[in-house]
Length: 408
Image 1 (tube, rainbow, N blue to C red):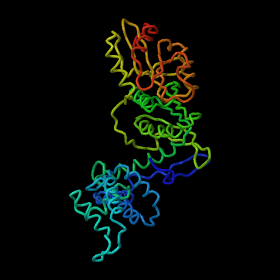
Image 2: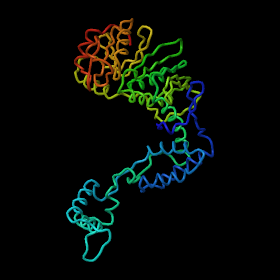
Image 3: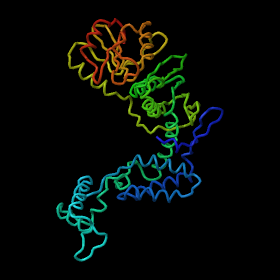
Image 4: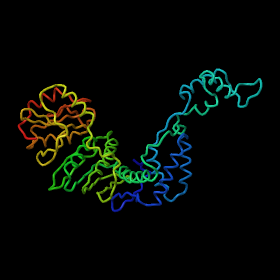
């Protein structure tokens, strides 16, 4: 994701419009290939020297902001390491102690005069069995600017890599704007069922508070924002940004509306499938959060006789759709469990009200204490609070009571 100062966007009648690039532009592709080649040639060099080289390459280019944005994204794909024969903190302690014990040191070597830094490095080198000439550079080799580039994780040759990076840049522009969003409203036009299930699971994976409302053949999804979550605001904005590439995997028509705070003003962002943004997420199906993985392992270990249904379809509850994380089936009776990892009291109360509607009688909620927003989960009736692990025995006790005869 880009930092705010690297975002290229304009505001038109209160709407924030990202300044997208054309990934097929031949001249821009050429410049991007040059940047990638420059970085790959810098393997083994200190980060500071690589950044200076890139600054010189960008120079006074009219598209300097764009090029710096590309470098920012590319840098996140770089691996840097400390290049030193002795761990720098250990080396600094040894050098400073030796210098303190044998100093004061002279700047120049004079026969019969005081020791110099070179003498100190020679002594430390003998103690550690390393070449003293390597020690001056190694002294602060753990400083970010001194760390050495060891690799660039970018698939394909320059041409394919450049195209990937330009598509990634367009997505990063939107992600940076969504970082300050207060909510998201998504509309899926006649969604493909497997794809809509995949999207809803991505929403749950990113622990976003959500409401799903059928609208004819369309589906409207409202992702509540971090209002009144206080310290979680940045974290929630980051979740919006990270969720965006999952939305881009949708094959059909979709639209997104988000109120955002942009340059200290209340604005909004509108986006749809015609923007032709390309997701950089691998299309590997649905993610499963760790809480769900841990619960499944522990529940099945109970050997309770209840069949665990993984990744069930969305369920209509009153006027909304709810996506359970698990189903439980035994002797024709069924119950469902939804995990709420990130919540605030108002959203949880609203969900509990929804469960009073037809279709919600046999649906349980597991609510995280660790990620709660307001109040304490145990103050609300009808939930199973958990810290890191959802208690399988408590879930079993609840489903024995609430399970109903139902086809699934």
